[in-house]
Length: 333
Image (tube, rainbow, N blue to C red; front, side, top):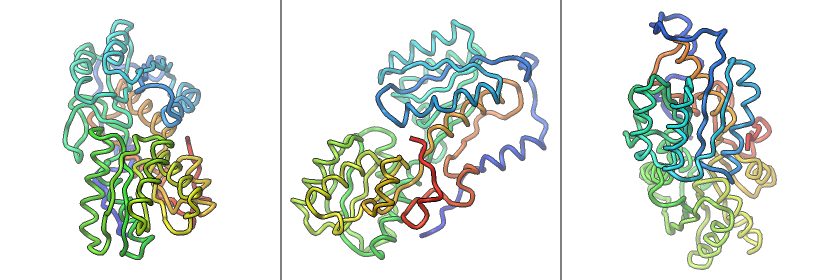
């Protein structure tokens, strides 16, 4: 598998530089003795990945001397806007947000910044900047992935599984979402490196198990020659695996997922999913809270992209999980 070039500094390197470089401290910056109030606004409830954010709160509050106020975004841009305005009026020191609509949130993020509140994006970028430069101006930064790189990696895993030749299908996320479009672009770009791999089917799975189950059924009925399916998320990979099991085709079609879920890792151990790319929501949320607290205290620079794929957590293993190394990973959701 080709080694991807890192486009940002690893978290370890960032922290090393922070320790060596003088960083200007605003006179209003708070000290380590001050407990900071940080509001974390998620996209909404009902998704295990998002629910895992809160698993870091107790540790973050103790380690960083902060108080975390979790607000449900309700899968609604207006509700997130109201949450930002409430955080401003309550005098929050920082806001961590995973936007439902990256564009719609910008006006309200600007209001928070104008009020002197530091803002950090979590998982999903603020604004519609280039995927290769996803940090919104004047914010703490973004803790997340470059989704085009994730797509490229998924295709590399598929190529490895097929020995660089074969027919594949793709079960995609909801059209128009930044994660969907980024992963799709990356997969298609990397596919050009493997001329003997042909994409014969694309079906939307809407990120959920049952929709992916139906999508996989449709794929094997219309394209029985398919040898592998790339799923834009592990939830969909689990649904695809179930459909193949019910069709007695587990040994005939390989699956590549994205997400690193507990269910996916269990199926990798059983040989029902070939591999996945690890996402770590608890670690991501902690990193966002830590970065925000450091900026508020004048201990870190703004506009930093914390690429999850480059975090020290993956320094020895990388972020690709297959049956060969699955025992080295711990799922966070």
